[in-house]
Image (cartoon, rainbow over all chains, first blue to last red):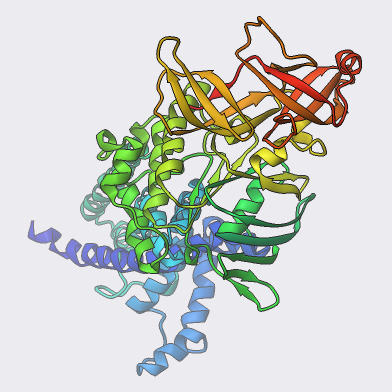
Length: 227
Length: 364
């Protein structure tokens, strides 16, 4: 199997990228989804549309703008300057930022649906029982939205694992730094290494099926437990 | 406890302009047609809805627009029972009950209840480890009441807690409400569009229609006020409180002393000296000028007619308000008779007569 040892770095990098991205997706996506579900602000649907843009935008378009934003002359470059770098493009950190933006709709949508599904009433009940909004969020809203959190996290993770266009635009193809599975597959095909390409694609196929199947099972279970 | 409230504002095409002061001792009923603003007022008191205005509860200011003061719902020591129980579906009955207890005590508000006492009072002991989804509608509403009380509220707000239930479940739940009313001293506001509920539970009444307060006062006074719409309702009645004076086991009757007379009522169980709530329907009261003799009707009392008004929706009938006792010093009752009889007998203001009461509903 030693000839397949070179498959490990892209797999490891992909899992690391997806994990870190998922953590940031939850941190950014939860308050955003909460605001979209609860706010009466007239601009919220416009914000929702911006969040959903990656669903319809060609990844190369998103990648192009990200490349400019993360590059030496963009805000990303300015941030990198603080840490002694020149640019966030073609770095792991840049990939995380791009992935969070790219996968955000896959987290925000299920979370928003989950927060909207139970309506105002449980939160009103919590408030009349002296729970502060912060307390009610953690003790009532989060448990009730659990299926949304599971779906959001799984979709965000899986979508990050599978991204290609954006990574290629802003990450390039640096082994161990930005070369993720999807880029590696592309490389192997280009260089006619079909065996390696097969190994990675089969792995991705099984992984994707497992992800979707598990999510469905978990959601069905919760649908039965909570009416 | 005094509740001083004034709320003003619009919600869609609904205009609320309600100001009232209630001395909430026991249960105060908020009564009126559906869509009249009762629930909105209750939500304003809980802080769930914000209209401009003022609110103070027992001297504590909860809302004062001039001072830009508005206490958030969780800073108000209220217990709220919604129309649908609204239990937390992810928590067991026990955890639901304790939800408010863990938080309410911190604000050090009203009376603190022991979990065991409330569980007994509401008959919840067999349900404690169940999920709300596994409860019947009546059970859920009992848990919701317990949950609200466990948060040590100073004021209990009940928003049509029975109206989502079927008739039979409603009847099953009533004794619990009556027990709570008797056992607890917590002042409550009880919203309902069903007068029969309030006749059994309310001590005072606030009449609400089209976003305005029409009248407020003791239940009995409003029921016997010919100027108010309660009297023209088909099921108009007057609620009285009587003290058990005598128990006749042979016939299963009890004698109750009410203000200005005594009434004999069938009752399966009774205790001497006990106070009972009873209700006399206007359609069960008829009048005679002379003391009736040899009648099957048990209750014939001398009365003095206070007013006679033609029934608004049905001009063939007249609503007569009469006070018990020859000099009219006792409690008021209402009778509904035909206009023909009223004119024939000359039952006008100041006339003396006898009221025959065919049946009396006694709260168990």
